[in-house]
Image (cartoon, rainbow, N blue to C red; front, side):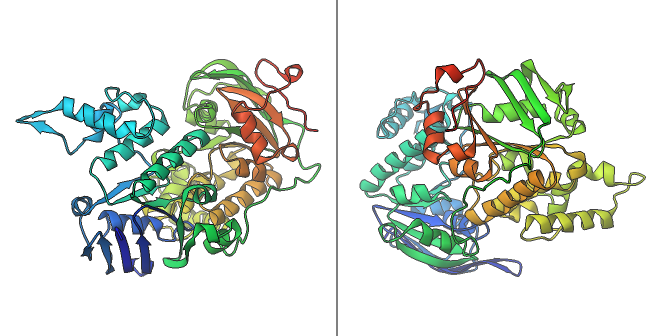
Length: 514
């Protein structure tokens, strides 16, 4: 047994995060770890990696038992962790990244020839032709993930831990990664696979453990389980997967809130689209389709090379994010860690940061007003914990995402168009349901216009009043959710379903809905 956890406990203040957790991972096994946000998954990984010291319990790697260890001791014991955010240096070569911190030396000089040969050997097992002399920054996200794994395998670990490894990958890259992990499992490696995607669990995992509120609530072989059983363990309140909503007739306005006319931004486009008032428009696209560039162009975070943007019937130049905000456009960015959340700041400061000038009087912050707005917004979001003084880094991924949405929810009277890039990436079923309900209310009850980009077909069907499919920077289909299935969305996005030529235009093609 390469890894065994017994009675692991960890509390932050009075809040227990791990409460007597037991976990066994065998040789030649992919063990999936699931749980809602705040369940303790991240804390458990940090304990296994040596980044966090548990309060009680033991961790055994191989035959050696530990009560705690440092990150260096965890590596020496045989643990390798690959986090959701890549730890690679973009300007260094693939070989240099694989050996970063463990350089091979000959005398007083780094032996680059040895490093190149070993890096090539490690990567060849994945069946990918990756040049090890290239800077990592020039690789695709999928190839960077393989470099991360090669970097971990170089140290010959007994236990490989992957934290949401497909969060930044497209569907095809995720499937390829799964095939690579199955080969590593067949070679006898023990793998702990942390994910929120049930499809991945049933495709590659042998066993699954579900954490909730710091407790183990389910352990079983995947072959003996159904998705419904696992989802019920993750989120009993939800009980079942989020289903596509049925839009009430007559709730959409004919007037256009936002229009793009032949817009080109960073090589994406030309794109033409219209977003109506009280509408949720989802632009579905796989990794590399240009979905993020499109939203950031509208928001002024990227330069629009050509074309025009019309907001509320008037021409709008997206010169900067501040100009977009003045025009009533806000963006919930896709990378909440790097673009949305200030982890050292409090939840209140994160939520109200863009609004302090508006809320202040005589250059003085109005603490009572700020706390009142925070409490009301946190209640609407079902934010946990809902205290204004909690540091943002202590929140789970789902609650951090709610905080990012709350930044604009707290200023609704000033926002007409809300842009959301992959709003539920990396968060669990329960948190998704909360955000879905909030988005529908914002559009259909509060009258906001919402443009969402997503690579999740289930999410698309759950939210969209109308769907645009983006492929290689071009809109290739416009469909109603009633004419869609998850399989059809993916088929169109991958180019497997041909679009009738009669319906194809220069910037978009319309697929018949019957």
